[in-house]
Length: 576
Image 1 (cartoon, rainbow, N blue to C red):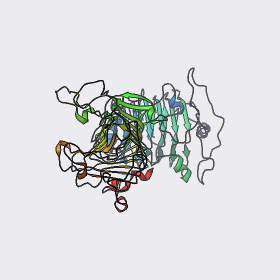
Image 2 (image 1 turned 90 degrees about the vertical axis):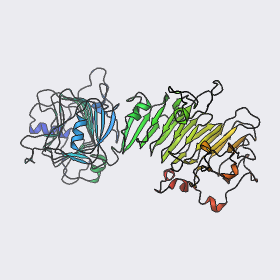
Image 3 (image 1 turned 180 degrees about the vertical axis):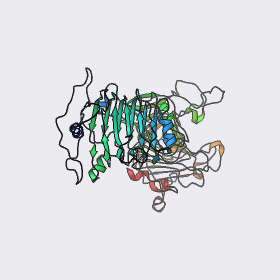
Image 4 (image 1 turned 30 degrees about the vertical axis):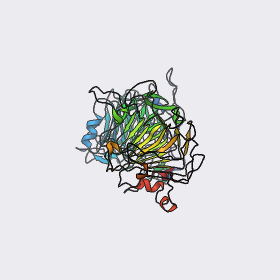
C-alpha cells in the first residue's frame, strides 16, 4: 500500500499501533517469523489545493517521491559540495554545517559518547556508500524548522541509552524529526534500536521508503506528540526479524547506492563547472554530473585532483546536449600571454577515471572571420589516465581533440567509442595512448584542391609502443579527392624523442584521402615515425610504397586491448 498519510495522537493504543503497522506495505509472502498484520482501511486525505501527489512506487530511484516530492519537493544537499566522512566527528560537523552538503558515509561510524545526538540541519543528503555504511550509537536528530533532508542507505543500530538495550528508558530514536519537513528516509536498516523512527511535532512532507526494521523495541512512532504529523508516505518497508532474500534485495542498504553521487545541471547547479566544483579534492567515489538537454556555453575544468567524474547528457541524442565555447589558442590572457592549448580547450580533463557519455563538445571559434595568430581551437584537451568517451561528439576545425599526458615520459590512456569527431588540421593529436573505435571521423574541407588537412598528429614518446589507434571506424569527408592526409609527426618544441605512433586498421577511408597519405612536419620526416595501416578499405585505401602496411603478426600485438591494458589491465572496451 503506497502513499498513505496518517495522523496519530501523543500515545498510541495497541490497536492504533497495529493499524499504523498495517499502513506499511508488507511482503506478500513473508518468511517464517516475519511480522504479518492484516492492513485495516487506511485514512487517506486529499492533497491540499494545487498539490498533485506523484503516483506509482518506483523499484529504485535516487529522486524523492511520494509526500517528500510535494510542495516544492526534496533535494537534500543538491547544489552543494560533496564530502566523504569516515569518523563520527566529521559526520556531525558536516551534518550540522550551514548550507547544502552531500555527505557520503564510508563504513560504520560509532557515536561518541554513546547515544549522543547528531544534529542534522537543513539541505543535507546523508548517504551510505555501499552495504556496510552506518551509524552506531549516534542517533540522527532533525530539530524544529529543519527542512530538505535525505537520509539513505545506512544501517542504524544500538541507539538506545547505554545499558538499556531494550530501549525502555530514554527511548532515543535512530532518526527523530521534531517539526521537520521535506524529508526522505530511504533504504535504511534499523536494528537493535530503542525506536527506529520517531516522527514528531508536526513533521510533514515525509517519505519513508524501502527501509528494513528488525530486532527493534519500537519500529516507528509517527505523531507521538500533540502536534499533528501529516503528509507522510510509507512505501515498501519491511518489518521482520528474519531476512529472506527478497528483503535484502528490495529493502535496506544496497551495495550500489552511494557509490555514484548524482549532481544535476541545471536543476541543482546552474552551470557544468559549478557541479564539477562540488567534487572534492582527492575524490574517491564516482560522481556523475547529469546535464539536461540544452546548450552550455562555458569552459569546464576537471582538475587533476578530481578523479572519478562523469559528464552525462540526458537527452535522447548526443546532439541534444552541447558544451561549447569559442576560445582560440592565440587569444591573449590578462597577463599578455596567449591561451595555448590549455586555455583554448572548451573542456579540460586532468583527473583520472573520467567518463563522458551522450553529449557533444565543441569549440565554435570562427577562424575564417577572425584574424589571429594561433587560430587553433580545441573542443577537448585531456591529460588524465583511464578516460572513456562514449557516444560523444567533438566539433571544431584545427586541433579539435588533444589527448595528451602530463609529461613526455608519462603515459595516459583514452578510449573513445561510438563517437563523432570532426576537424581539418591535426584534429586528433597528442601523445596519449588513444583508441578510437566504432566511430565516425569527418575530415572537413578547407576549400583547397590540393591539401585540406591532416587527421592525426601524434607525438608519442619513443618508449611507448602505443600511440593512436583508429579501428573499425569510418572516415568521411566533404573534401575533394586526393586532398587529405591521414597524419603527420608532431615533435613539440622540436623534441626528437616524440616519435608518433599511429595505426589505422579495419577502417573505411574516403576518396579524399591522398594516395600518399602521410606527411612530414617541421622538418621531421614521416618515414621516421611509426605510421601504418592494416586492412583499411574503401575508395581512399590502397597499398603502395608510401603506405606502410602492418603485418598480421604485428597487428595481433596491436589490438584495442594491447593499447589500453597498461600495467593495471584496464579494459573499458570489454563493457561495450
